[in-house]
Amino acid sequence: EVQLVESGGGLVQAGGSLRLSCQASGFTFDDYAIGWFRQAPGKEREGVSCLSRSDGITLYADSVKGRFTISSDNAKNTVYLQMNSLKAEDTAVYYCAAVSALLFLDRSSPRESCRVPNFAPMGYWGQGTQVTVSS
Image (tube, rainbow, N blue to C red):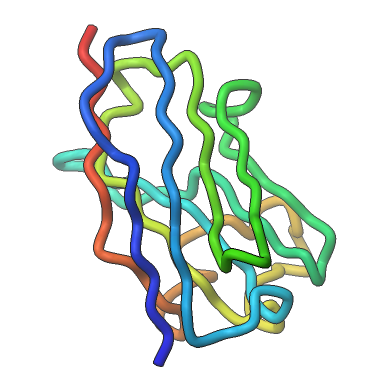
């Protein structure tokens, strides 16, 4: 059974940092793309950052480039999202998701692959962790 469990969310002041963790089980990291998504109140869920080792690709939303870093520790089956220079607009529930690498990459527009439709409905999702940035 595939499971994804996020942790590391919390309340932080603007300019601060948080590191989110996504503990995965039930699948082999190298065969899957892993993504971080977020959903703010009243807004659609959006892709933040995605990582696919098999495709050799790491993607970031323009809004987080230079501030967020995705990484993975295969030995721990864990994916991290280091978030620095946080802004009030980063406030959201953050989800990690996994999908087979065979389904992830949009080969006509690879850099547009970090999207919800590429992870749903065939992917797996965690329960989410709240990140609140106070201004």
